[in-house]
View 1 (cartoon, helix red, strand yellow):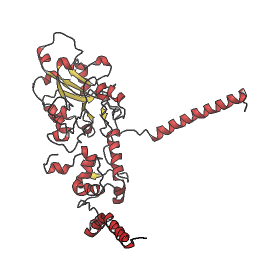
View 2 (cartoon, chains in turn cyan, red; view 1 turned 180 degrees about the horizontal axis):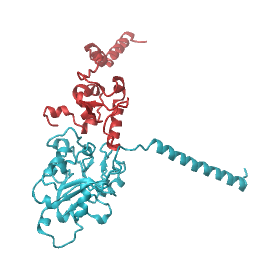
View 3 (cartoon, rainbow over the protein chains, first blue to last red; view 1 turned 120 degrees about the horizontal axis):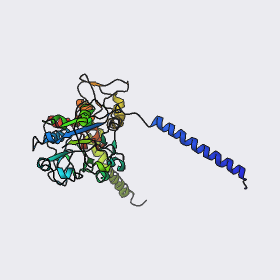
View 4 (spheres, chains in turn blue, orange; view 1 turned 30 degrees about the vertical axis):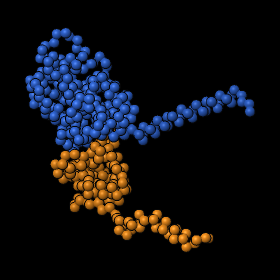
Length: 255
Length: 137
């Protein structure tokens, strides 16, 4: 069969037009069918300020950690290899490795900082998840869907803050007191701080913020210029962990 | 056929042996066993009995996706109204809503065990009746 140039161009052009139109229709369909707006998260950006000066007033206090442990059924595995941590204490020079000052006040140097998931604006952990078991919500909470987690631990490798823990064994027998309002986790699942999203949805503050006896933690909406957290950030100088990485962590520390 | 009598007796013995589990179950009454899930004494369920019988697993799956992935917390029934428990809006929650009325061991487990299905819901979601009895885990 012979084909002249005019015919070839006509066929090629027609095929391209059908292809482009098809893609466009698919996109329109996808928009209508797949994307469903989620409930009232827009216009918020949750963040936290931790005043380590206030925290140092009560050395040895673990009220926030205890509150979190109960609220989220966090097990005590009894050894550091299997440890599950949502909030934890870390030495200042380990927590803030980018602070290279040789001379640091003793009370800062010798007292721990309280650490948790930074709920980054640009979270590296969510990009590497192969099953979309972790993602950043519109209000900034870096969420986890434990139903979907396959335990590949890519997110743990990607997180520069060590905020994620892996369940090497069944955690349920190691939970001191079960809280029926929150699920436990299974063996083979990664977990981390969820900014108490289950409490936020009911209009409550995170459990750690509520439990702190010296009110060292302030939780709020960065998008609201009149919020308490914005007021503190405007008045006090704060630092964040490893800001040079560009992850835009949303936990601010007053040293 | 040679040895007709012996062969027929042999076939009868074989058939009897082969079907003995069925026959034994029939004679003991186990063959007619039906699971008997115990319904709560009062209250209305979120959906009709026939819908729940056929689709409760799909409904729970929808709940889980709506709560975890889309942040919809409160339960709307198919008539578009918020479902209420004691005057409060009920959440889409297995432990907080379903098990508020139903008893896991006396309701859920009855059919699940009969059909030998092991839903992995319970690997993580806690049966509150265990806590009430203060038998931890």
